[in-house]
Image (tube, rainbow, N blue to C red; front, side, top):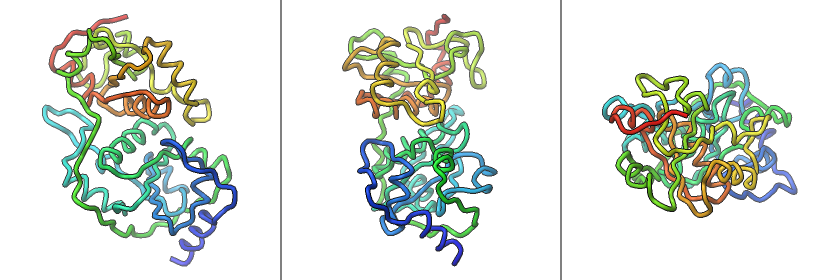
Length: 288
């Protein structure tokens, strides 16, 4: 415990000149400068082996099933019921006054973005550590591999308010002005050269535009600037003021589009169940 407290003190020593938090992202400089008494809860989303090898001091390993459940019809990565999510979040040390920081491991941005989406649906103050654990290491911030118990948090009863839509909503907006359906999957899934998750049909929702989730990342794994993300959307066919309806395989990669839309100041909703649900309903697809 003494080692852990020392590591926390070193990692979160107050610093002068710490930038003010703006938008959904925070930097490693901002996080290290907060100090342990400011209700910060850091969640690590990624491989357990990466967490065990060294993580942000005090960070809590977050299993995938803490934020998602298998829904009706076998749909993967659905939002848990409010009472289930409340218990899961409390077990991670989250309380009403927490500011939750999501740090992602290698290749784990989609899962982390989905975690951020869920935290915000629960009405919590949550941000993404830009660049994730790799940025923390690159900036030579302190790490810790100590194992210690998490003190449970205390939450008021949750009232979920998620920006989630269903297949009927998507169908009703396909030919409507002011809406653009965006496919966050890799191009080989979008164009139909490879079928997707489980028994998904090859191709994409008819009329959808392609914005692969990883096109929103820089080479170092951090997120692109607002202007760059806005250009990606515009180049794909999203018109100014359009509501983006984001989807992917099951609803994780599309969460990166949701994050990108927030960064760029665009409106967006998530088609949860995504192409897994669309395929199961045998709704119109096309290949390109």
